[in-house]
Length: 388
Image 1: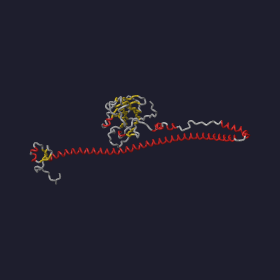
Image 2: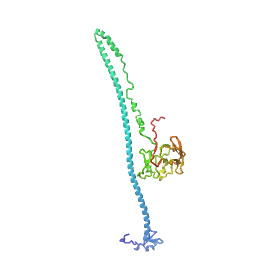
Image 3: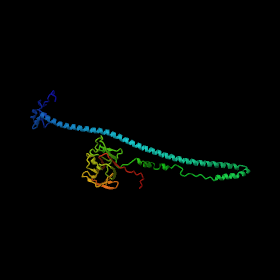
Image 4: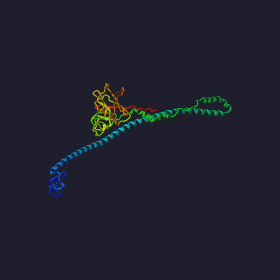
């Protein structure tokens, strides 16, 4: 209180407020202390009560200040997230545009090639018809001349007619020897060759420039040290990136999850590990993703220091007997039978099988501790007809 301000006094007794009633939680004077209103109440000097309450308020203030710092920190994260959303959107838009440019280029080239094939066929068939028309018109002209000459002979006098008769007969007989023209089979454009299953054939021809991955990686779950490929099918260790701390992101392990979790049917995907000296692959229960990066609900096999191990998260890792240097790992998840198997896709040998005790969705899990990439192997696309 400022020294220039008058000291408050008791409203009832006009005395200085020197005591603090603990029961009523208010300053009182000495007369109030002895009144019936404060009988058997607890009192402390005002200065002591004020200090105690100041200390208590300071404690609350510290909590509020800490809360403010937390709010400011989260607000900074919100701002970073908003900026990152824009960066993500721009990047994804550029990727979409690049892919459509490739597709447009392919379709334009395919359109030009098919139109060129059609025009070539038109030209060839038209040229054939022109040649046949030319020959037939020559024959028609010859026949017309024969008819005109013969009609002229028939109008001649008897002597003249008899004198030219043999020549006229020979001319007519030669005309009769001409082969009769025939309608030409297969002369028209082969329309089915150009239009039959057109979209399907174009799609089938697109297979070399497109691929299908049974698992798509979710970059929003990637540890900041991981670099995710543009097509979201491979990862490698790189420099730490400045990313927002979204709840889905794995912060404590250089790991990433697939974008889709599975809780029914059978799912299988191959992972190309190549010469990567430290890696692990498996599945993670969805609840573990939201429990502070708790990976106890993780089923995986790992490779480190030349040793392959199977790890269920809750028990000690089990060393696998395989001595082969594996280049690929097949993850086979049968949700209905609650089985998770790891297989060598080259030999079809089973490396390890877990019995899955979780009923929740399981997300594909990938981990690499170095620059060597892990890549999900694309699946061959079948473009043949499906017949029952």
